[in-house]
Length: 366
Image (tube, rainbow, N blue to C red):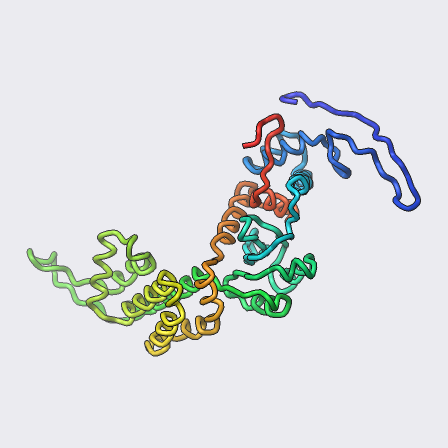
């Protein structure tokens, strides 16, 4: 209590029955076993876990960091029980994604409820086994209520949805489709840069250029400087970046045509949803005939995900909420300076990324 350590000592009564086994008396100031702390202490620890690093929390509250994970899990379960809504009940639109939480390709799978804006399930690893494990936690009624699943286009998600959720529609996030285009454009820029480096450089005269003359331009350096102007949205370009793109437009190279293809795909997603099918088909026809290998391959990839991309546009859903959750997870990992125990991280994620937030004891709820 403050700077003083305080112990509450109590001997709860126990009843043992042949059909139920041993049962301990419930007390109003503590949660059920295996908790060895008062409810106020656990609520304080859970609140601090969302706002400070693990070493400071462990020193301040005189508990081991491994204990914090169990406390967060109990507080989250108690908040959910008081809320009266089951975490897995009433799921209609969910988002599925994986995110790295540790170096060395260590991933966790996250499932988000779009309607309530909260994480409903998380597990270590990624792949079909993890997604099947989530679906195994659902009843037949809960699985049948799912109407839309948003994802990033991963094949393992599409396969599991088609097999286990035949009544649900798979919506491929448009943001990821545009990111595929930006990756293709950046790969094309690097290829143009390598070709410019291999080309012979223009000869320079002796001394500085005369007044009114310009030094021979280094084409490789110019292509390298186009990295950010090519990837940024046109409305976000600075004056210098817009000027660099203007010079590229006048050159009429494959790099400029790739930039137009990238912006054309963005325009499909920003346009009228009613015209999305016709607009996407026109873009696919353009891309597959552009004779740019990177965008020909991109057109094949988008064509494979065509129905999922179109449903995402028509339904007005995306994986943006899931990506926001992934950012919060990375913030939690950085704030805790890494997690050796994935269960502690999952317990913290369930508190940080839900609509049930712990409050400090004795304070009015915000």
